[in-house]
Length: 438
Image (cartoon, rainbow, N blue to C red; front, top):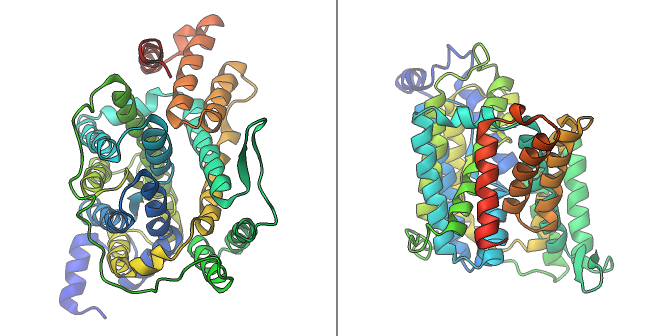
């Protein structure tokens, strides 16, 4: 319950009356946003721990990075937008950089840290908006769709629904496997609950499948509440030695580029839905970008992949959230989750696979807006999308997209329509492939 003094402070910090909202509305909006995105505290440690990172330390880093990002967004930028380690970025970190390229996770964290520093610099120099505006919309949409398919492949693999095959590369898994069946059930649960607008559909599904798996003897339940795990195994473990080789500069670039589109698009999209844009522009944009950038840097130092604004923040906006108090409430709830590490550690990989698959569905929806009737736009977009899952690399998908876009436009007499930034990025990728291979 708020007192007159606390009400005055909240009014001063968040301008509740000016934004036509109340303390109660903002708190409920924060709870709503948290329920739709808190699955990340379970999914992120599972994904990153495959690199050899300590599960408990990553769990703590995930909670703290999300809390820091939300607090900065709420207290400095005053927007109802929550942040946490991003889906897609964590998959790239684990499966492409660490497992695919053989980069130690300590070096990968250093790459995330540097990408965050670059973000801070370009945000204040107004370069960020210029880069975003220079990239063709078809490639922006294709990158999101390709990451969706990449996540889908990982999800199906983790669920046992897709397995390796020496003849056909991949094949359908054993549908009699109870773990695969539970994963399918979890996915159906999310779809149905999402359709009926039930808050927290993803986290409810994860917990329900975990309970069922435990009752069936397929999983070990480790409890709900416990001591906060030790973060020292990942805290300040970044290794900058050898970071600036050609291949790792490409890694930094991909972290930068993917988060650039993801964060900017989310900030604008959620703000538009909340009615916070003025003349089509986002007030206090620098402060919002600083929140995003500082969260990336802090997250890398703590021990997690890139932190980014969450599109799930739209659920809190739909519940009435209009100020940074919503984001602050999300931060408080993430901090409270620090004591739930036993519960997070009880969740098996096949229980989180449905969450990855559903996020993939959401990410691929944007490809309907690609100009498919223009072959010079369709082909680069298509190559971007298919190379990510087929080459098992977000970076390679982005590279093929930019290279093919410049080449197709050049050969069809439309070179003048290609933004200079596309030429620069395409040439850099060509140089990388020629000099250092795939």
